[in-house]
Image 1 (cartoon, rainbow, N blue to C red):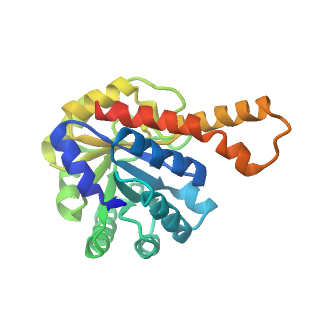
Image 2: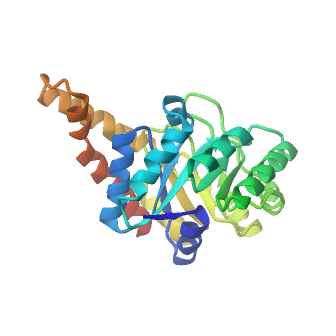
Length: 275
């Protein structure tokens, strides 16, 4: 087992011109497939429990689950709380054995976002964890709109919060089911010119694979969150499994049968970011 923080995997990625995948976990089967995919590729992975996952299964269970998976592989594994919204969630993640916390104060006014993120970052660092913050708003397909990250505000945010990575809004959108047009490269470059932090793209499924790699090589973007495209793989594999064997009723047999598809899809994501 090699449990690590964001600092441990993003700094080398930044130096080497590659990125690390933050894979969104929703249950045991997909999390196991992602851990095994990282082992197959010999690459680090960030296993993420976001708000949806935490609504389905509590933070202590996620911590035990992901730590157990990390014990099965010998590649670096970050256990990451994604889109944390409170100090209570951060404390619960620390107690549960997470190695990284993302605090999302992006909907708050800048001063409040800075104040709250700085407090969470201090808490995380005191416990030996890393902390990711978010500035600007990454919207949702057919939902809440985005608000682009201001480069000057990014410089202030980075200096005042002490975060280890910064999630930015540069044309990326959550829950995008098809690769869209490219991100705002001018805004990315302007942010990069004002801060030395590793940058993070949420909604990475909407970014074409070739552009992900190009951005990893040419900019400080070192983490892409990937959820939707893997959930699409899950859904297709599940439908195929049930159609091929409609008499199967055992949950373990059904879900176990789709893990190979998830593992292959995750391998492709990981490999695509490493170049």
